[in-house]
Length: 192
Image 1 (cartoon, helix red, strand yellow):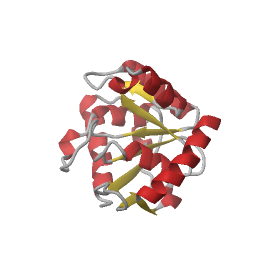
Image 2 (cartoon, rainbow, N blue to C red; image 1 turned 45 degrees about the horizontal axis):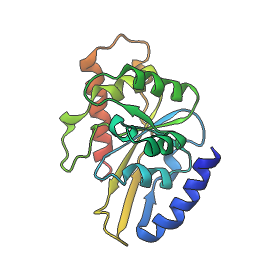
Image 3 (cartoon, rainbow, N blue to C red; image 1 turned 180 degrees about the horizontal axis):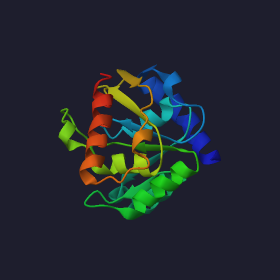
Image 4 (cartoon, rainbow, N blue to C red; image 1 turned 90 degrees about the vertical axis):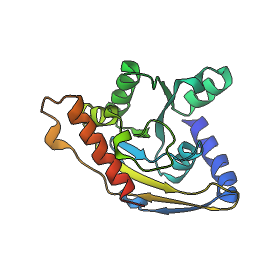
């Protein structure tokens, strides 16, 4: 936690100079309790910018390739990130995600699974829907708009939490989870 706070302070000092942050809707982030922050993904800077713009620490799911480098593995793990294998259903990452939510923490996920430059609701992965339901967690949609050029503006719009209580005690299949994920993605893109 101390390492995260140090990185947060240093990152804010540097990145608020490099980019001009404009955050709208910060009041939509619950001050406590489990939540999933879901955002569009346009740049490798997105997790960093989201982390610096939020009042709570976000535990990000990140592609497993980033953890192959020993230094990066230790650094990302110290910040609370954990690996996911994007090639298939990664049960270990799903369990980790649900445990984070059970601990009343903030989970960060990019529902499209990779950087995307053109809106396509069909790219939503069913995993986010499953994690939201199994973790009994509200989802906070976020839209990032930026070209990430030096000294340019980064607009971050945080939407109101989405609740899926009606699904918690139902038996759902992959198609149901995909529809929930698509609804989350629609909520993200409705913020642009």
